Image (cartoon, rainbow, N blue to C red; front, side):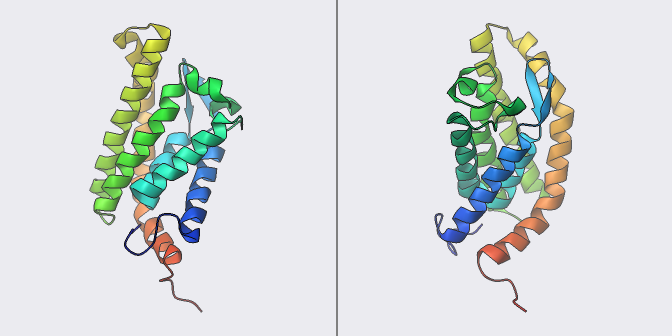
Length: 189
C-alpha cells in the first residue's frame, strides 16, 4: 500500500487492517499440536497481511489480533486467549508475529510486483519469528537449543515453506486488486 496515496488511519485503511486482523483471528485457533507448539494457519494469515497491507498496516493488523487475544477472546491456537497465553511457552511465537509481518511487509513495500522480494521478506520474517519464539520457549522451559530446535523449528519448516509459496503466488494479484479498491482507482460500472 502506498502511504503517499493514503494515510495509515484513513477509514479505508482501517477497514482493511480490521479485515486482516479478523482473518488472523479466524485462522489461528484451528490447529493441531506437534509437540509443544501447535501448527495453525496463523502464519499464513500473517504472511498475507504483510505481503498485501505492507509493513505499517500489516503490523497494525497483527497488533489488533494480539490485543484481542490478550483481552481474552479465544483467537490464539487451540482457542486459547488471555494474557496468560502470552506468558506461556508458546507466547513468544505470538509476539513473534510482529517482526514477521513487519519484515514481510517492508520487503513487500520495497517492490510489490516481484515474487522474490516477498519471498525474501517472508523468509527473513520467519527467521525472526523462529528466533524470538524459540528463545522465549527456551527461557520458560529451560530446554537447550538442540531440543528446542527439534521441537519448535524443524517440524514447521515444510509447512511454512508451503505457506510462503502459496502467499507469494496469490499476494501480487490480490495486492494489486485491493490497492485499486483501497485507493479508489478501480473502474466503476
